[in-house]
Image (cartoon, rainbow, N blue to C red):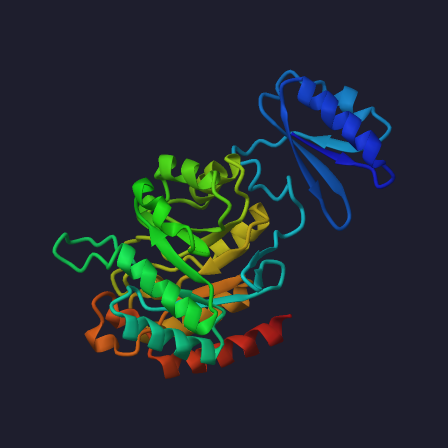
Length: 333
């Protein structure tokens, strides 16, 4: 249930109303937007008399929310969420460009790529330290050492870093990581999501290979219910009957998610198609569709990459892509 307050409601009146609602055994989520203030009532609201609340002098209207996701719901928070990552922002027109290799392979490799993508216009560095692979015989990542190398690249370039967590037991290794990524395979690892809800770090939450948009939002709700509301939703392609590409990019997920939720939405074109030559058109489509950012795989030597080389752009290709993305965004804004 949401309670929209009138513009002339005082802070004291609002405080009294919140205190009374809490006395009924409910939690209250306060959202102060540009044009209205909304109180989100969280808990069992079935017995709440909506006519009683709507009759209060400071209340504009009361609406029941039928969706299971509450805090992630745009009805709770009408304005787009905006939050800081280092010196950068994401959301509400702030477009975040994230780039880097699929996996960290060596200090020379990650630092070289970090310098290249920053020069091209990337605002954040990605790189896998823990790698979930289909085959147990494939390269599994450098683990804790990989995070240390990412931090060296961060120190060298100043780029904030994002890397994927695979297990709750690894959380203590992510103390200096700027954004924790939850991969597609872990989107419904509820215990991990609950734990991340108690952290103070932004979470990049990727959509599962066979998950619906609403299931993605419910996973975000798990994190937000724990108190962490800085979630970046990521569409990275879903599994369909099509075999021409690795996955099928659901570009419609961008406007759908932005209609349903206030959380920023980014696109991962690299995992969506699995083929480097398709990354550019998918990225431009994402920018045109209104995405809040992109996360692209870039490698200085894709032919010898230990992970996902066929979908990785070379630094010069990424530099050209960034220029084109800026042109698309200029055209639609």
